[in-house]
Amino acid sequence: MNILFLTQYFPPEVGAPQNRIFEFAKRLKDNGHDITVLTAMPNYPKGEIYEGYKGKSFLVEDMDGIEVVRTSIYATKSKGFVKRLLNYFSFTFSSVFQGLKHIKKPIDVVITESPPLFLGWSGYVISKRLRAKYVFNISDLWPESAVKLGVLNNKLFIALSTYLEEFCYRKADIITGQTRGIVDNISGRGFKDKTYLVTNGVDTKLFGKDKANFEFIRENNLEGKFIAGYAGIHGIAQGLEVIIKAADILKDYKDIVFVFVGDGPEKQKLIEMKEDLNLKNVLFLPVQPKKNMPGIVACFDCAIVPLKKLDLFKGALPSKMFETLASKVPIVLSVEGEAKEFIENANGGICVEPENEKEIAQAVLKLYKEPELKKQLGEDGRKYIEENYDRDKITRRFEDILKRHGK
Image (cartoon, rainbow, N blue to C red; front, side):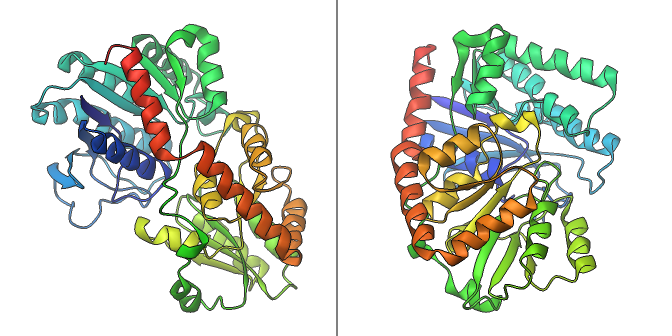
């Protein structure tokens, strides 16, 4: 089967969508499918084109035997609404008007990644031109999430976005959602017969406590420290201020260090917050290459996974949870709903109220004081991931869905 992935985000960018799509594509290739990826010039999350790609409007490259077709994008560091739209729309159109010219082989299936929602239109047009099945994969409900986060409040634009969302659902041959909450939401709108749960997962061979990178510990003066880590995007949805506040509560525990790994639009604000509080127990580190992450995550004594306290996130399942549990690292989860149920089923951590720094601090302190509990939660979490969220099993499940719909 010839499969085309359409996504704005892809390696060498680092992040959950980039990693998930690349790993998914690799497994489909290993299972005998021919894979092409149509994506943008890498620019996320800093908002500038990466070295080696600057000045190029089009490029074809090979990544682990996968043909990657890259087209132009308007990269911006601005958080402004208009410039963010230009960022999205530039690739929405370049993927169609540039990318299609260079897809020479027959394509059976076009898998389109949303967000950004606007790419749903591109996926539909491309699938029609190539006479291929149109699969619309949803990792975040849009525009609903943007409205509830306060990022989108223009009534006309909300109405247009909602129309586009429904249009993509109607036109898709298959809709896949990453969480049960997403799938239930879409199924409830009349699309139950073609909507499926295809969760994120993890390569269990890549993650584990035995992968710990002790060089990372030495380089950052973390020897003998209890590391409460956060690795991922520093964005609005995560509400990472709560971790800084928890660090302030525990500042007298000299052996506990809160380590942030990554980047994002809220990072500078968090750094300023740390400095205003004069915290010595908070360390910010830059984005790390994907290959370094198993070794870094395995160094954590616990990982903190927060989201803002919104009904929207009751259906969220942050992808970092899979890699963290696979590393035998317990999670302090500050999320309600589906993610909480996941951690409880896995017995892989401690669940606390979202945006509650006191409960986060108490959970971190409990794991610090009870090493046997920390070890048991880590062991149980790893076992649960092995049984339920191995990427190979998830890929085979997706192939079965394609077969069911005639591909």
